[in-house]
Image (cartoon, rainbow, N blue to C red):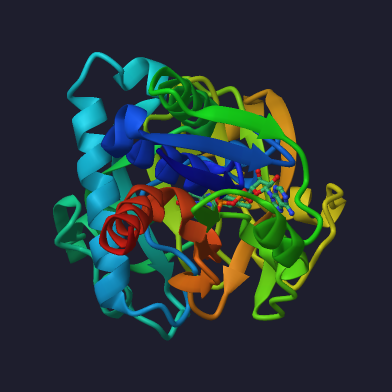
Length: 335
Ligand SMILES: Cc1cc2nc3c(=O)[nH]c(=O)nc-3n(C[C@H](O)[C@H](O)[C@H](O)COP(=O)(O)OP(=O)(O)OC[C@H]3O[C@@H](n4cnc5c(N)ncnc54)[C@H](O)[C@@H]3O)c2cc1C
């Protein structure tokens, strides 16, 4: 019987855990060790929107492969009896750029063939969109995508992992090398997100701070994202709507900033004035695990196999299932 340990109980740790447990069944003992579990992981405060975002130098080919696998997985949940429990929704999505932005959406959306119904907003539609707004947009696209609301998706994955025989243990791994040398696992999978910076002394991994506000606004059904450099976004989940947001590089501040709160409320209310009356449910700050390139690779430690899977930036939910599939493929090929 093989022994496998996963370190990290965020969305990436569980995406690996579920797929390993599904594949090995009772032929392997799988344990997931983590300092924090849901509702205290980075993903928990995010809206879980499918969309590659802030993945820096990771190649478009890899991002497309991993995000497509996740899209397929979310589709399978959406079409199953588990959709409600897992918080998976299919939502209409509008992305725009302000008039003074120099960049263009088309160049950034290399993943456009994965989502449903991707198309540019026509000049006529854009004129209508701009008619009753202070903010004027120059271009936009529409498509349909998934949200997998982590507040529901993470407990769903944890339950599935345990049903398949996986075990969870809450503790912090203080020293990676000592852990590997002293443990009796054949395989150790490192899904520690930003924690890898301290655990492995990996200075390429750094925080990208994100502050968001959740409001009660049951009447919001569509994702609206202004991708301009100073843009805001609005993402409906099943019970609340996420209004965002910030992306501050190398900022470790996990306290709520009043200026950021003002930026979010003012910007989102300009997009949707009805949000003025929406009660605020929660202010939240999370630190995205930024890295120039996502680290997904195998490393040999004596007779032990280590697989790193961290640094997913602003797209950890979008990429989790595809990255977990690649981790499983590595384990299958090396064991
Ligand atoms: C405001 C905001 C909005 C976002 N929106 C989206 C979105 O809509 N869509 C999307 O795809 N992504 C989004 N993201 C990004 C996404 O949340 C992250 O990329 C993702 O959660 C990373 O998951 P992870 O499992 O790799 O890391 P984490 O969720 O950070 O989990 C790491 C785990 O490892 C554990 N750990 C760390 N070090 C140790 C150690 N030494 N010993 C034991 N355990 C350890 C931690 O306790 C934690 O459980 C958003 C992020 C933010 C901040």
